[in-house]
Length: 211
Image 1: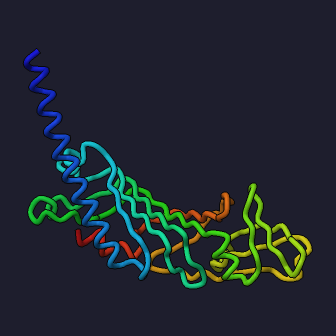
Image 2: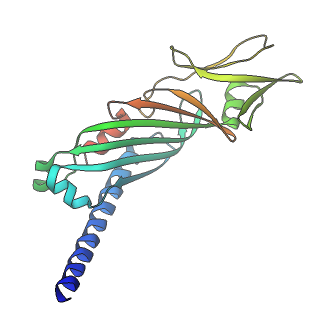
Image 3: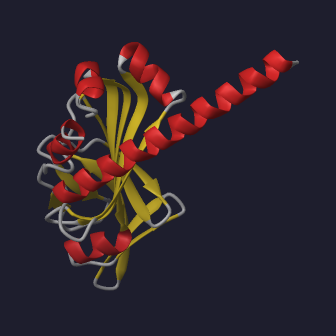
C-alpha cells in the first residue's frame, strides 16, 4: 500500500511538472507566432501529448503542435480562422537541454485549415453570398444562383453555377500564413479549405525555431 501511495505521489509530481513545462512552451510559441502573424490577428498555440517532458527526453518529439489564428488578412479575403496543425513534431534535443530552446527540426505530417465566412466572400466578390444547408448561393441583381466552390490549379477560389453569365473568381495569393489551398468543404455560414503541408509555413517558422 505504501508503495502504491508513493508511486501515486511521484506520478502526480511528474504530471504537475509536465503541465507547467507544456504551458510554458505554449506561451512562448504563441508569443513568437503573434509577432510573425499579420497585424490584427489573434494567435494561440498548443502542444499535445502526455507525458510532454518524457517524450522530449526520450526521443525529442511531441505528438502535436497547433497554431490557431483568427481574423487573418489574406489579401483578397479576411480569413475567419487559420489552423496550422503539425503531428509527430521532432525537436533538437541538444538545444532543448543545453539552451532550454525547443527548436523544431521536422514533423511527420501537417495540415493548414482556413475558414472563410460568407460576409468576407460577399465583400470580396461584390455580390451577396449565402452559405446554408450545405449549399452556396450568390445573388446577381434580383436572382439567386446555386454555385459550387472549388480551388483551381492557379490558386483561385472559383464559383461556378448553371445560368451564371460569368464565373465568379477570387485570386488568393499564397502567403507566409497560408502557403497552400486545398479541398473545399461547405459548412454553416462559411467555407473551409484544407491542404496538406510538408514544411512549416514561413509565418510560423521563426516562432517554432526560436522558442
